[in-house]
Image (cartoon, rainbow, N blue to C red; front, top):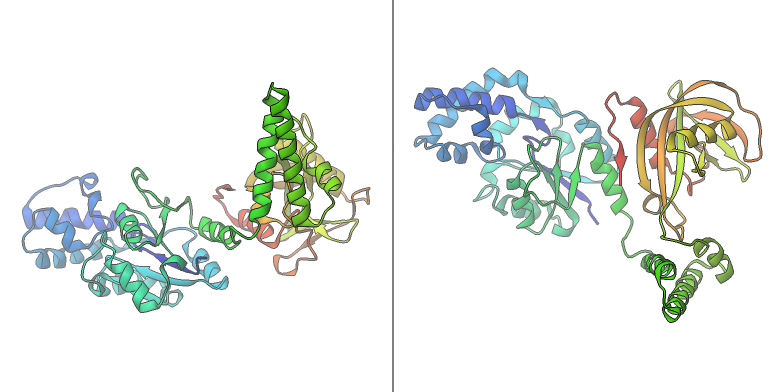
Length: 416
C-alpha cells in the first residue's frame, strides 16, 4: 500500500515553463548569439540545467548556468503554483501520507524558486540535483530518496510530468503517476496512474487503500456470474446452457458462503437478470445552502443524498430531478456532473452486481420537504458535522467531493 508520495517540482508543483524557457532563450542569445524558438527548447524541461546546456552545444556550462539563473530572475513573476496543489498537499498530510520531493534543481535553485511559496514544511525528504551521482532519468535520485527516508519502494509513488520522471521511478521499481496538468504530451509515457488534476491524487490513492485481495472471493464470484449470464444468453447448445446455469449456481453459492446471506436471497438479487450483464445506474444530488449540503433521513434512521436507481426512460439529469422531488420535495436544476464512480470501489457492503454512481450538483428552484414513503426528514449539514450516513449510498469521502466541486470554479468531473 502506498504511504509516501514524492513530487517533481517543475511542471508538477510549479508552472515554471515560461520562466525557464524564456530565460534560456536570453541565455543562448548572450552565450552563442543565436535566436532559438521556445518550442525547440522543451526538451530542457525536467533535466538539470547543466545537462540541457551541454545538449545545446555550450562548453562552459558553469558560466552559462550562472547567466541562465540571472535571466531567470527577470521572469520570476511567471512562476506559479499549479491550481489545487496546496489543497492536495494539505489533504495528503491529513490522511497520513509522507511527502517528499525529487527535483533536478540544485539546492540553491530550490530555495530561490520553490521555498518562497511557503510549502517546505509539507515535505519530509527533499532530493536535489547534487544529492545523487547521476540525475534523472537515471534512478539514482530515487534510490537516494529511498535510502535517506527509509521508504520501501513498494510503498512509494513518484509524480512528475516528463519521461525523465517516468524512467527515474520505473528503473527504481517505484510506481509512477503522470501529472497531466503539466505534461505536454503523454505519448510514450507509461504510468501506473494518470492524474488529470492534483485533486485526482488523493482520490485515486484513497481507492487503493482498499486491499485488492480483501474481497477476492467476491470479485471471482461476480466474474463467474457475469460469464455465466452471458453464456446462458448467447449459447445455442442445450448442454452448454446447462453448464453455464451450473456455473451461475456456483457463483451464488460462493457469494452466500462469503457474505452469510442465504443462497435463495443471493440468487434473488445476484442472478435475477437476463441478457448481457451491465452495471445498474444510481444518481445522487448535491444541493447546497449556506455552505451546507442537503441530506434526507431514511426510514431506518440513516441519512443520504437524495437519489436512487435510474428508471427506464430517464436520463441522469431527469432521474436526479425526479428523485429529489420524491425524497426532498424540491424542484431542482442539475448544473454540473461532479463524479462518476464504481460503487464497489467506494461503498460498503460489497454488492453482488455492478453499480455506477453519478453525483450531480443541483440548484434549487422551489419546493419544500414533506414526509413520504422513503424519507422522514431533510436537513442541511456542514462537512464537519455529518450525521449517521447510509454508507451503502454515500460515504463521507463522496460528500467531501461534492463540497470540493461546489467550491471550485473550474471543477473537472472525477471518474473511475
